[in-house]
Amino acid sequence: MGGDAEGINLSGNPSVILMSGLQGSGKTTFSGKLANYLKTKKSKKPLLVACDVYRPAAIDQLHIVGEQVGVEVFSDKGNTNPVAIAQAGIAHAKANGFNVVIIDTAGRLAVDEAMMTEISNIHKAIKPQETLFVVDSMTGQDAVNTAKAFNDVLNFDGVILTKLDGDTRGGAAISIKSVVNKPIKFIGTGEKMEAIDVFYPSRMADRILGMGDVVSLVERAQEQFDEEQFGFDDFLKQIQQIKKMGNMKDLVGMIPGAGKMMKDVDIDDNAFKGIEAIIHSMTPKERSNPSIINASRKKRIGDGSGTSVQQVNQLLKQFDQMSKMMKMMQGGGGKQMMQMMKNMR
Ligand SMILES: Nc1nc2c(ncn2[C@@H]2O[C@H](COP(=O)(O)OP(=O)(O)OP(=O)(O)O)[C@@H](O)[C@H]2O)c(=O)[nH]1
Ligand SMILES: [Mg+2]
Image 1 (tube, rainbow, N blue to C red):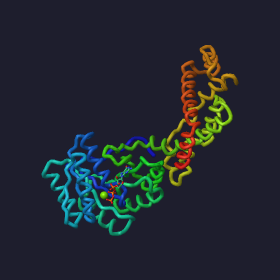
Image 2 (cartoon, helix red, strand yellow):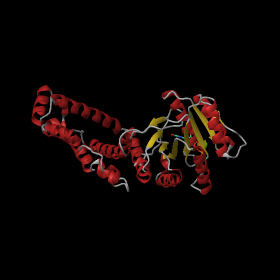
Image 3 (cartoon, rainbow, N blue to C red):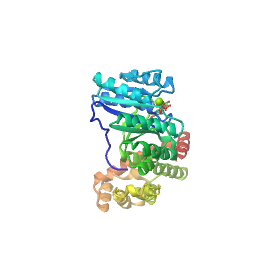
Image 4 (spheres, rainbow, N blue to C red):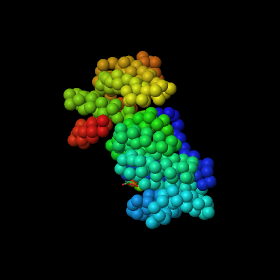
């Protein structure tokens, strides 16, 4: 998904940011979050502009959001021309010392010509520095088609992935990126105005690919606990299982269109080697009953595996944490959690 986070273009005076996206995707909410972010984190003076001319409630909603974050909202109830409102909003910003203008627009339930014509007309008239496409991360494959439709018309600059606080793993992120090749700039993680995060591609990759590992780990752990005490032999099996799932590149390669994008990403296959060496240097007794591993045993294990006592200690600590976690999951809570994780897959 690429490396670093991408910022938004704030070079204009004022910088104009246009929101686009389907109904309910989170444009109005995100407009407020972004205004708040730019005000508090970037010391900007933003103005919110309400260009949703179909629902009076939409204008009220933006006013409420603006009030919450202490940012002025420009609106013109009764005016049915969104292009004119956007232009008047920018003029108001220029006259009153606002250096960022965030334009909230109307969305429709599905991609249709009227919406595309309207947003395209606004886009042409105001020539924003930044056009953002807002998409609900729970919409799955549809999100990709919608992104493509908006991109064909607007050639937008970035994607905002909202509602990542839900059960979704955000797989749409990879697909959208592969289809429109535009960066994801921010994510929305809740309804509150503070629930905005700069998008870090590597963290998203962890989120998308990590869950399967955790689920298989927990499943296996529960099996183990049904029969016997969890020991280092099981730990080793876990690692081998995760390794068998293939490296990250292979996993992402299974997602249509994404393989090409990942060709330059380097993932270390050797991450588990040290751990395996340490476990292999333990005696069967030590593996099944790690509590007997005292200082002299640690030294012997370290020497045998070509690692340091420190590394052995680190592994023992990790193991200890994992066994504690697994013990916790033995009870009813564990079953519930398992079900939850399975549903997420
Ligand atoms: N959980 C969660 N809810 C969100 C997030 N972003 C927006 N919402 C909620 O999603 C719903 C729709 O958000 P809006 O911001 O009104 O969406 P919109 O794109 O402006 O919708 P229209 O104006 O109808 O086109 C609201 O109930 C928001 O509170 C998010 O990141 N997480
Ligand atoms: Mg709205």
